[in-house]
Length: 439
Image 1: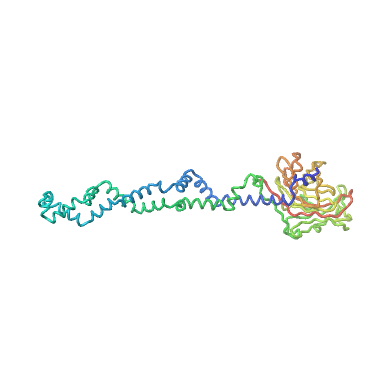
Image 2: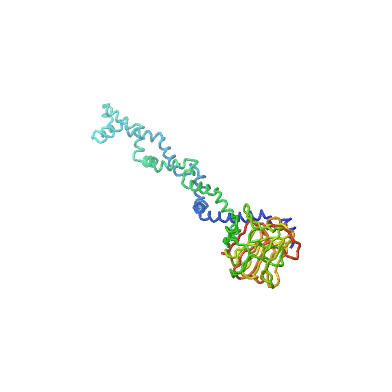
C-alpha cells in the first residue's frame, strides 16, 4: 500500500494534526462531562425552559408593549382626576365644609325653618333673609345636586382606592415605560443570558457528543511517557521472555548480525525512548535451534525490551508514536511466552513498513510505502475478539479476522540485523506508548 498520495492530498492527517485532534477530543470529552455535572448547566437548562415558555414570552410581550393608557390603573387615575378637577364637585366640597351650610342645616332642624316659606317674615328678618338667600343660591343647589349622590360616592371610593399602597405601586409600575426591567422575570432572563454567554455552556451546547463515542469505549490501561532514565526505574525489562524464569532471556539469534546488549543500547532523553543499533564488536550469546546457546562474535549491538512481567492485556487499542533511521529492522510488537501469537504493530524492514499478524509459517500483513520512516507516525492496533485492525495516524491500512489471539500479550520493542542483509546502524525512537482497554 503506497500512502504517498493519501498523505499528499489529505487522505491521511499529519501526525501533529492527528495527535492534536486525539488529545483535543479526549480533553473536550473530559470538559464536556465536567460541564454536564455542573450546577451552572443545571441552572441554565431550568432557566431555558422558563424563558422559552409561552407564558414567559407572553408576559414579557405584555409588559413591554402594553400602553399605560390601556391599563385599568390609568383609567381609574384619569377618572379620579377628572372628578377631582370638576368645578362643581370642588364647589360641593367647599360648600360641604362651609360655615354657611352648617348654619343652614342646623336651622333646618328647628321649628323656625317653616318661616322661610313666609315672605313677609323673611322680608322682616335679616337672619331669615340671609338663610333664604343661601337656600336659593347656586352654591346650595349644587350641594343638593351632589350630596349623597352616586358621583360623590364614586369619587370617594376612587379617592380611597388611589391612596392605597397597592394602587400606588401598581400605578407607578404601569406608568413606567421600562417596567419589564423591574420585574423578577427580567432578572431571571438576565441570568439566563449571562449563563448563555458562559464559555463552558457555549462549548457544551455546540458540541456534538457523538464524536466522543469511540473514546468513551476505552479506558487507559498502560501509559508510557518515558519519564525515566534507566530501565530498572521503568516497567520495561531487557531481553526476551520465557515462561520459565530459569531460562536465559538476554540473547540473539545466530541468523542475526547484532548482539542484544542487556539494555545498554537503550536510553531516554527528554522523554524520548531510543533503542540504538551500533557498529561495535561484541561476544555474546546466540541461539541456534539445533546447537542451543553458544558464544558468538557479533559486529553490531542492539537491544530488545518488553513488559512481560509488568503488563499484559487481551484485546484493546495499542498505539505508539514511532520513527526510525538506518536500514536496520525496527519493530513494535505484541507477543506471549511462546513464538506465537506474535503481532507486529510496526515493523520497518530496512526498506518499507509492514504491519501484520503471524500465523504458523506465514505473516498476514500489509506492506506500506510512501512514508518517511524517519518521521514520527502513530501506529495503532485495534484488537477485538473478532478482528485485528491496523492504523497509521487516522488511516486504516489493514484488517483481518484470521487467527485472532485470545490470550494476554505483552509489549515489545527491538531492533535487529538479519544475517542475509547488508548491516546498518540505526535508531528506533518512541515518543510515547498508550494501551487502552475496552469498557
